[in-house]
Image (tube, rainbow, N blue to C red; front, side, top):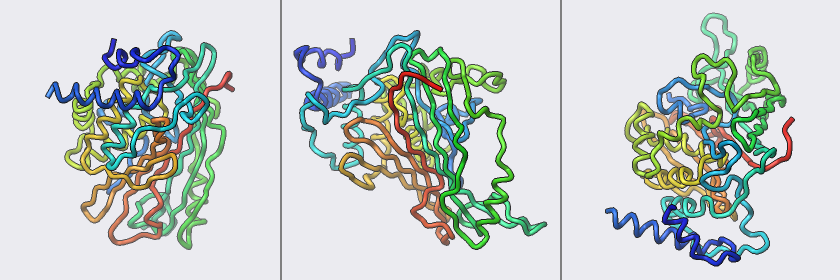
Length: 368
């Protein structure tokens, strides 16, 4: 039994788990620790991708997460956070964090504290809205616009958006259903030739992926590149250290980069991994604590129920910023974004991300 599980067991059985226990866990964890004294925008930066291994590359879909159910048995904590302001739950007692590291540590303390998991026959429904800023430059030979380039050299740009729904069965070895029937739409455009660029982009939209994709065990059928790869990448999680410092080193080593750029890729990867809440609680806790160890993450915005953190890497005439938004009460990352902004300006506003993902997770009784 984990020592923190023992702390949880000290409370009377009828007493609901509350934020006071989160504080106790945080203090105990610190005592234990003390005793042991182009830039280009990454698209779908999964843990498998960071490791440099063969990967199943997703387009507009849910990214890195982990399995927590085997043969229908829930392990290592809860999946869907319950609203802590609901009936029977005491008010928030944890003081507000002054720094990003403190906020991340407090979030780690709350992982697995309250929640619910799908029963046999139910599904986790993961609704993900993806928005990409597409750039267009002029073909030197024909003068036509092609969807290439970046924020610095684009003469036209537009934002594409789509929402997909992934149904994850309680038993991860059962059939997953990925509903991608909603078409991509254009929500914003920039530049006098944007309409031309959009027309060209539309002619290039084709895929062999079924609109309603059925995936046994969450695996892509007939995947010769990575036949054992799963959507939640659960095959990798046994390799991942549970010690936060070791986990951070493990991820940095797999980026292929160094210094602040390696940390930027780690922040993006972990932010994506924590959006779906699929990983075992002990690993999600380690992920938040690993983020707390990254020097330079700052609190960018505090809302009533959320906090947005940012990590910025300047250099080579570009400023690269990754952000992720945390639901403070539910210990869940609900949105991530990534931007690379040139010093010389652009037709695209600086506050518009190159990529943004917004995710919500619920439990449902059936899949399409």
